[in-house]
Length: 265
Length: 256
Image (cartoon, each protein chain N blue to C red):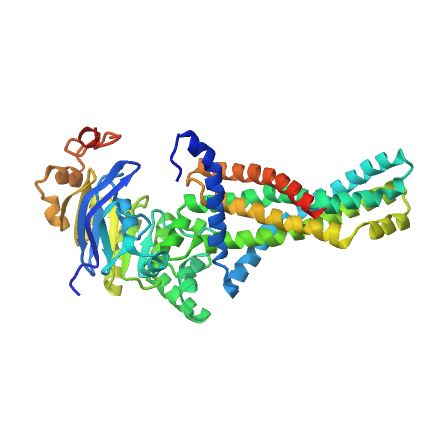
C-alpha cells in the first residue's frame, strides 16, 4: 500500500496553443496532505481538473489508485469520482438547496440509504465541521468560512479516499482560515484521506501540509516538505516562498511563453 | 468546437449547433428513469415554470379573447353576421392564437428564467461541483426543466383558451348584446374537438418542448460570466420566438 495514490507522469497540457503544463511529474503519497503551489495562472487548478478527469492531457498520464484517468469511459470516470471529494473555489454550494440537502445530495444520488440514515450521516458530518444547527439555512445566509466548511462536509460525505481542494482559504478572514486549515488536517487524519490542496497561501501551507509541489512557468520547479522549501537555494522557490518581486518568475503577461523557442517554421 | 474564421465554418456553424443540440436532447432523454426522485423534481419544476406563469397567461388570455371578439364583431357586422362571432373567435383561438401566444409568453416568462438559472449555476461552478460528485447535470438539472416545459405549455395553452373564451363571452354577450344561446351553440357545433382543440394542443406540446430545449441548452452552454448569462437569455427568447412561428406554419400546413 505504499505506492502513490495519485501518480502524474510527464504531463503536458495546452490550452489554445498556449502551454499550461509542460512535463510535470508528481507522486502523491497515500494519507498525506499535499499542496500544489505557485503563482496565479500557472496551471494549478488545471492539475486538479486533470486528476478529476474534467480535462484530458495532451500527453503524459494521470493515474488515480492505479487507474489511468484519461482512458476511462464516462461511466468509469463517474465511478472513480465517487472516491474523490472536491471542494471548489468558493465552495460551489447549490444555492437552491438548504445546507442539509446540499450535504445529502451525493448520498441521495449514489446510495439507497433510508431517510433516517441519511439524516444521521449528514448531521454527523455537519457536527464534525462545527456547524450543528445550520442544517435548515440556505447557502446565501452563511458566511464565507461557514460556506467553505459546509462544502468540506459535502466533499467528505461519501467517505472518499481523496479530497481535492481548490483554493480552500481564499477570501477568508485569518481565523476562518485557521479553522478551515485545522478541519482539513483533522478530517484527513481521522478518515485516512489523501488531501491535495491547490493554493498560493504560503503562510497557511507551512502550518498545514506534509509535502509541497511548486509550479512556476508551466514546470514543476521544486518539491519537498515546507521546511526544506523555505530554505531552498533555488531562486524561483525562494522568490515565491518569500514573496519577492524580483526573481526568475515574471509577473508580466506572457502571451505565448514558447513563441521564441517553439514556433515551427 | 468549430474552427473559427473560415467562411465554411460560418455556414456550418448553425448546422453543427443544431446537431449538437440534438445530441444534447438524446443525452438528456437517456437519463429518463421514471423513479421517485426524478418525478419529484419534475413536479417541482412544473410548479416553478408552469404554475408561476399561470397569472400572466390568464390575464393575457382574457384580453386576447376580448379583442378578438371586438374585431370579429366589427368585421362580421358588415355582413350582418355578428352572431357568428363565437365561431370565428373559437377557430382563431384554438388553432392559432392559443398555442402560439402561450408559447411566446412562456418563452419570455419561463424560458429566460431557466436559461439564466442554469447559466448562473454554471458561473458559480455548481454545475462543475455536480459533475465532480459524479452526478450528470444534464440529467439532474436540464431534464426536469425540459419535461416540465413539455407538460406545462399545453396545460397553459388550455388555460389561455379558457380565459380567452371568458373574455369573448363577457365582451360579446355582456357588452355587445349577442344572444348567449346563439353564441354557445355556434361554438359547440362549429368547433371540432379533434381537429381544432387537440390539433392546437399538439402544437403546444411541440412548442413547449422547443422552448424548454432551447432554454436548457443555451443555459447549459452559456459562458460562465455575467455577460454569457445575459447572452444566453437573449438568445433563448429570440430563437424560441422565431422557431415557434416557423414551426407553427410547418405544423399548420400538415394539420389542416
